[in-house]
Length: 83
Image (cartoon, rainbow, N blue to C red; front, side, top):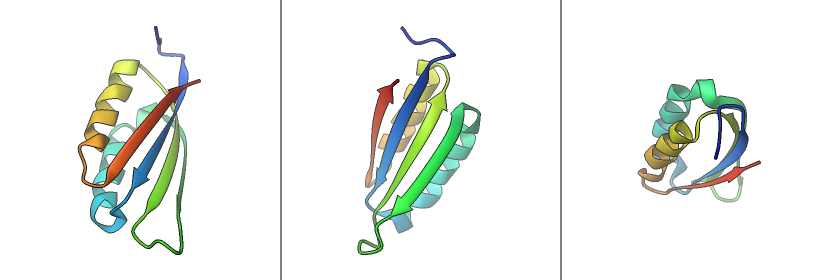
């Protein structure tokens, strides 16, 4: 069972970066208190793809809600791993 002190890592793959990126950013901003660190890259050969990795600390229920919001976006896939 996860408690508030547990760390986790989330990866967010964005296939339609130009369409989905603003909404992804909005969701991450809304959950900024969970985010310890964030790293985003895009493949220069693939204009519309991006990958964001996020280090998190927070309640599993909040992280699940954020994952649900992100997974509901077109072209966005989320993976999560508890550390």
